[in-house]
Amino acid sequence: MRYRLGGALILVVAACLAACSPGPSVYTTVLNDGRSQVTVTLTDATGKVRSIDFVRPVPDWAFQPHPGQFPTTNDGPNTVWTTWVGGLCPTDVHIRAQSSADGIDLELDPGKKCDSDVGKVRVLAIHFTEAVPAESVRVLETAAP
Image (tube, rainbow, N blue to C red):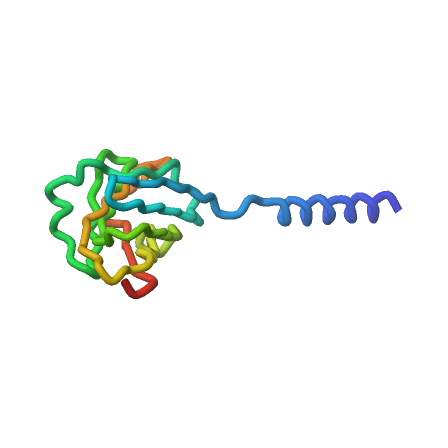
């Protein structure tokens, strides 16, 4: 009887730990440059993101992206900058970070477009808990701009 009770207790504890394990972490940052407001929410399923923030002023290299292209670069071993072209309308951008065979995939939903939109370069710094080479980060657009 003692062994059955001990085994049952172990199963209950294991089930509680599995059910209580934390899900992905969520990080949010807001850019309000006087002309537009962009809120970025990054959901981290990798467990490697420490924080996010916008890069201002936008560095010269960031003027290279075209719609559908998302260059990345390192700003130190633990920080990756990713770039996209967004609009001037208030927008909610959603990014999901998840592990892939080659590194980390960032699934980017750039938010809504408005009728009078003009392309504006956005640069987001993603600070990781460990070194992440920019070339191991792939950005995929998940919704049409």
